Image (cartoon, rainbow, N blue to C red; front, side, top):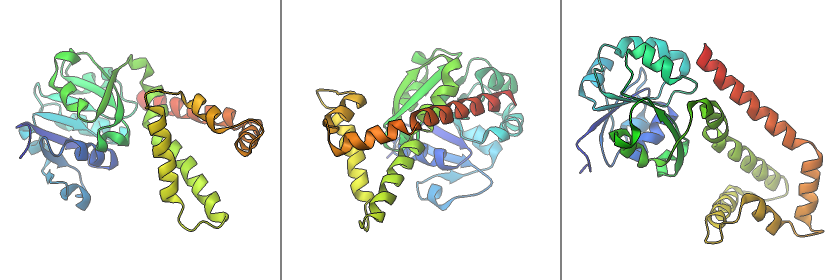
Length: 258
């Protein structure tokens, strides 16, 4: 039995929508519109419906579409949503643009999560022209993670650092896994997962060491970890990573300008 009698609609049912649905499916009846019906979404108890029907029966509507589909979709729903709450997860699309295309100014929350929403442990940046603390949308988003109200000017950076963060961390984890395989370990991924989980548990322990503190704890003076870190740092990888993420921030800004 659902905790809430609200209907939640998702326009767009890709990876982010699927993870969000996983975080909400036990509390709400969920509907979706997408040209392709995914078996993984249906297995979560989601009902696919036409776009106009979704707008009619949903109390709250999530926009989980690609930025390049924004204008097309919003033009179709602008006369169908009335005063219903809209929560946009669309990367790079500003409140101003959403309000302009939907002809609304007081029922939209712009938010940016990570895939951790499926477990309720995502940082979620939010901003809105409505009073968020008095809005039912905050209660919904709080089921998905920790909401952080930020200035909209910081959204591109949040998207590129935190929204994309699981990909960066997984890139490093995969690299460690490949190195382990090349050194004779057949299935190192579960161990890498334990490393990530253990580091997280250490970070959130009562002592709350910073990530830099944890690095120093592991890298004893003159040891193998220190040697590896010195090589990594001397290679210039820090500058490469910073440059890459700045590129992502600029890409996010361009999405909003197009």
